[in-house]
Amino acid sequence: MGQHFITSNDVEPGSFPWCTTETLSNEALTGAERLMLVRATFPAGDAHNFHKHPEREEIIYVLSGRAEQWVGQEKQILGPGEIAHIPRDIPHATCNPFDEELTILAILSPVDAEGDFTVDVSNEEPWYTICPPIRYAAGAD
View 1 (tube, rainbow, N blue to C red):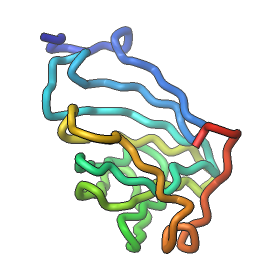
View 2: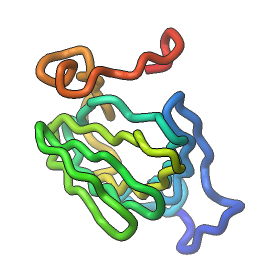
View 3: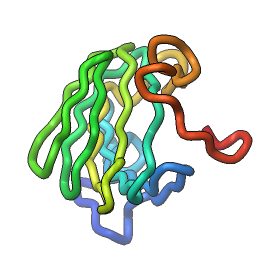
């Protein structure tokens, strides 16, 4: 059983080539079995290339900045207070082509599911043509 209250001292930091993360809730931190909450900050010009979560759905909530959010082949520019819902196994991408930092909350459910957490599809069509992937260092994406 995890904690009921999470402070800044408790968050689990993470780093990816496209953003830094802070895991705010998962089974280890809070004991949550069905919800995972991650805050992600994207520098200007970075993106989480097209990917999918085969067994999880996700809500992306913009805290600050603007996101070019793709859900399947639909694109919407989202600002603070706006969300995107991504059904399970649907390719999506979060891009920050703007000159300001972007901070989002990603809420995923369930926490524990069979199979891969994330599957990169950025090199597959039509995703490659829609939004060519940003290339990071070998093994980073």
